[in-house]
Length: 392
Image (tube, rainbow, N blue to C red; front, side, top):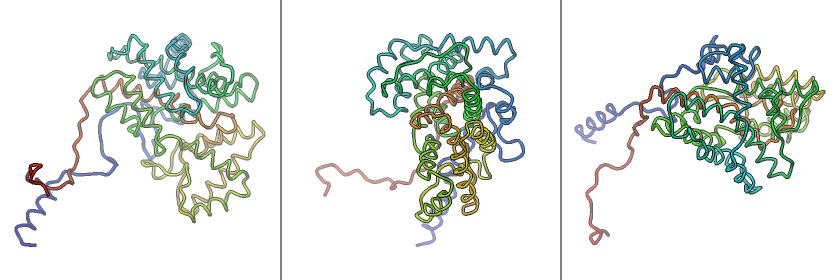
């Protein structure tokens, strides 16, 4: 290679913009919603520790915090809860759609299409003002659990149920999905479900949230941004991990088999689901919180099988791979105990994360700049065009 060509190539490489595959570590925007930190601060929602919120607040309080910017007073919480009750109904268009859904449909496809249909029925859909976006967000928070439960019950031939005004959000969700309500065990399950909803509610610029913000940056309607987010969450590299973890626990079946099962899977280079995180390399603070609640619920239910399998798998993975469980891992223990259908684990994620997604869309459109990144071109240099009759 001659000197002139070498210098030209070196200049080209030097002048190329910085590139990070998968945008890893790239700062793509500003947000006041969530701090993801591996240090002492841990995970913060609008400045509040996730541990404090999970232990001392309800999911309704956390949803209010994300959507309205502050933890509610008692009066504000009553008003917010009343809004959710008032919004807990589906338009006839959704009833018709859910009645026609094939039994083979993927639950996340139903959620995505159902949310799009809700946008058609919403008179606020074309209004992307701050106030209208907040109203729409509250309606979606109330409607999505109904849609998920109604679709699943229709597909499985079980009678529909209506949410109860005297139940909390988590109690209603548990009732809609499992028919459980009342009694000490159902209350213990609802409390742990409430904690999981809080832990799943928001996590900065993850793939689905970023997809929602990119869509919202065009100043389209909130429903379009939500369908982008739901479609992104459906991908197995983002959502669905807790479902895969539950399937692993069922396959292992008892704690005595766990160590051998994991070691055999590792020897075959199989991925063990529920471990590691793209950002949280040193462990997920949310995992320790849900682990405590999963253990407590196991005692309350008199069934420690899933928890003992989980801790055995956890031990081997830390010993062999130095990997820590993420939020999905011990959440699977809790959801198995509750009897939530595994096909609905990711839709339940949507019931929670809809708050974070909507808060991000509101924040994006309140201070909007169209997202338009660049690509690093790796194709051939300019080529001379050859007319069709001269090509050989």
